[in-house]
Image (cartoon, helix red, strand yellow):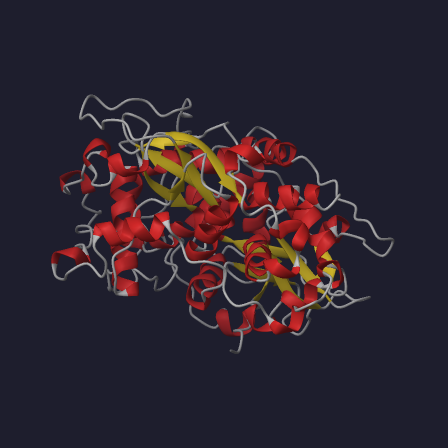
Length: 490
């Protein structure tokens, strides 16, 4: 697939500063409008016009007994897994490039329409090197900025003001400027000849992806993610006995996962959830009912449903309403119903957990205890204190709007968090197991010494708390991993 160049992407005529980020995989098909135009109502669920592809009992059975590991790749049979190069797990077809001068709307269109989870950012369209990335976490932060949910500290107020003035004047905001809002994910590279030991050690420390380059050059040949590596180790586990023997142990016995829980009550506004995710450096957030039963999940990838101008009112509607939109959209696109929650319990085996992660392509599984009654009492506060939503100065509170103004979704029926079907199926939120936790376990079992992932999580929170941290994009290569001496530096 040919990657659109920044010249091609910039060939469209200038548009208003409101976000109009092109077609998204939503059930709503309409012309492109300004970000603040009306959403007439949320799309009807596909369940209203067809029978579920699987009964609820069948869905629960699938969750309780996920598929076993697939057929191993013959290329890696009988090989010492420590000799497998990271380049062997990469596919150059996954690469999508944009330039620093590409407008954020055009870059977002490429991100969504290509199906990629991340774009590589380069200076010129003819080069194969990359110096930064653009993903859904960056998009989430920009949407919060554009809708007035972020407030800069005093140091970064000039950056905020400059971007806002550009938007209000109808100027295109290039990625170079948008990235000044903050870098959510460290940009790290590994040479394609580096073995999996290095990748596992780095991923076990909390890094989510690595850019793989040709040995001795900056030319990118692939991207290796945590999920891709976990999937590879799962499908080829019998070739890696050090890791394979861990699969039969339970989550409780292995002592993995975090009990430092961050969640949000389903009756809270979606904008509060996105702000919380941005402040805490999270890629997903558990949605709970009044009794702390897990009833849904919101991830940064789901913000692709908010890039359409008519979706603006969703930000003021509830989290549980947005979960219903997510599930309805998946049903439309996939032609089948989507189960709302994927969870495990402390006595689930590691094999059970990894199988669910691979099957659902999720980055974490919520650990739940036995279900508790889901009462329809007055909505309880979330498990942790919710941050108040900060608003920028008045002259930035809203970007230019089209007439007529949008119809607020307050009249749209929205089920309460306590009444959502399935609220009593998952159980109370007790912990979370992420891909980082699993790869940290694999690294330690292999005699490696990964960085404490909690330390990196704290660093992400500190980076997010200031809202705007300007980093030098040109110096991003200083974060590269040097494995020429058999070790890495972070």
